[in-house]
Image 1 (cartoon, rainbow, N blue to C red):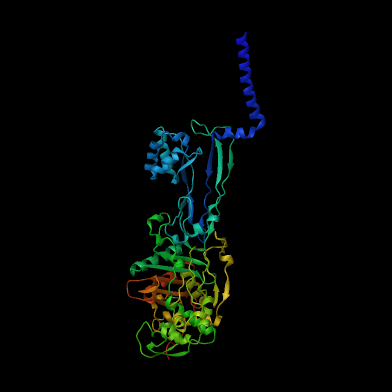
Image 2: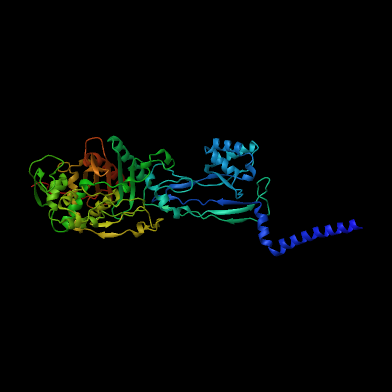
Length: 573
């Protein structure tokens, strides 16, 4: 009887314990315990957003996304056989063995979703998982993970930038990452702890990813390809260190092509030298040389201090305060008009004409042309160049600035300045983005926010353009190779000593900037080649490059000859 009573007491105690536990689970805090139970088999799966395309002006993709896969592991199923699975994955996917081993073994938080490899081509990923399953291994799965692709390889790569595994590493990809990236989503579902598969009819949640927004540029893909090709041929032919070229729509300031050489394949950036991954055209400052003379001339004419037929006696050497100034060609006393000074590219003549300006007056005009300030095209690391304030500029520095030394620019700055003359004296700020876009730094850029500023009068711009026509004249000019058959061309050569690490290193930068048709400009082209190892100047090296690019863009956009008459300005008197 005693034993029976003791048995009933024990049974009652056990039943009381289970009853209390049931009250706790269902009455006191049912939600938290339900969540804990659900979490035992919960799997959180990221849903990757598709990155927005980067498009050319015609909607052609310069950067897009193609199908790829993320290979993931469920450590609850892979931990025990991690070394064997890691060996297969590292061999087939060319990924680090030890990092893979860590993912397969899992973290302390017990996560059942661990990345093994991102952005793997679909076929390779599928074949790898199939091989693992055939070998009897479980716990490796696949999810969608778009791969960034650059269909044209190196076309505009220096502008586009490129992607790392999880982040943008340069160019537009980085500058406009917030717009392009979108927002990842997430799915949570219940899984069988033994097989790692989704359990039907169990609670699941889904947060859809929000894909990125496309970015439309002003670049013309085919023109960009052609510009890069012609520039690369010149850099190779003249054994130069590097080069850059830009094509602008004269009236709108839209950049149709912006080429850098050397460049790289955006699909394989690790194969390139690090210094080739950015845009030298915008990030590197250089002294422009004699192309700057047309800015000096236009400013003088606008200020009423010079005119195209003005006569100058130009000596072979001009003695100045700190050092004598010479020309690129040997001569005695010659008699040149202002038009002749531009046509022959005389440093001495330019200095004599610029004597009518104080340093403050010259610098004021150059700032209006956009020198000394970033163009804010939307490219990280753009240099503002160097332009000494007029109040701090000596007369010796002013002499050199007048013909394009002792100041520095980037390619877009100088192209926009030359384009100001082409555009009747109105500077239109250059654009690389069609419409508007906001950089990750909060700057709004694009064609819709482009500015227009009157720099010199229409008459001064027209007079300067007529002088620039003489530069390509086969009899009077230094760059007949820059002519485009059938068209009137206005242009200017440049050859400048090159500064490296703060000193002139004995090499040069040669350039040619101009526009066509000269009397009704539609396009401005500016070409720069750094450190050619073959004798030549802006006329012989970059003039023919200009001619090929300008001829192509005029034909591509159906711009016929204007029918104007060539300049008859005298160069000598």
